[in-house]
Image (cartoon, rainbow, N blue to C red):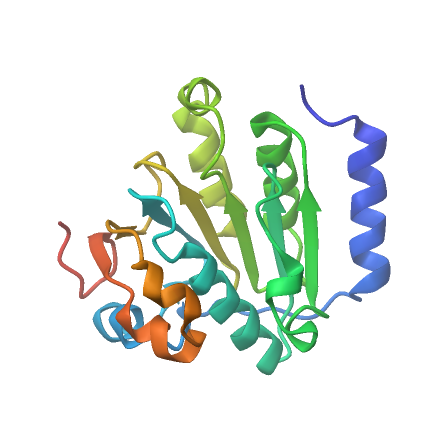
Length: 216
């Protein structure tokens, strides 16, 4: 079920009130701070485009990447939004100082999450939008039309916004960059500091649509 128009209007008002409109210009990449992503992509997640992160295994490191992105955007005084229909995000596992710039939209079904993502993608205040669909029902994901993903792509064109969609399998035909995490993290990493674990994440690039990239 799609969110009621009055709820979307209230969300727009909240964003405008909390984050006064900032000018935007078209950019190229949003750095992640991880060499395994930034080096082969020429700088990080593409802006004005969609990136898909496919997690082929549970506990493969997507939460660590999200924390890295939140820390980086906070450090550079950028604003971010997380659309989390399954409510997987645990704010207590992140430093409070990394969360002051984040809008967290949680709960709802896949259709609602996509509508909220579309709203965020059109907001000039944001530099990063993350849609987490890892735990979405497979039947609901199959019903998402390809046209909707292209609509999201058009929404971010000509902006500095990086849109990251986290999925359990490849779903986003309009993704300019597709990353994949194939293996679960060893249990020992649960007791290891994040700065130590992050460089060990095994990101595989399966698609990269840029002027210098080679598609896989």
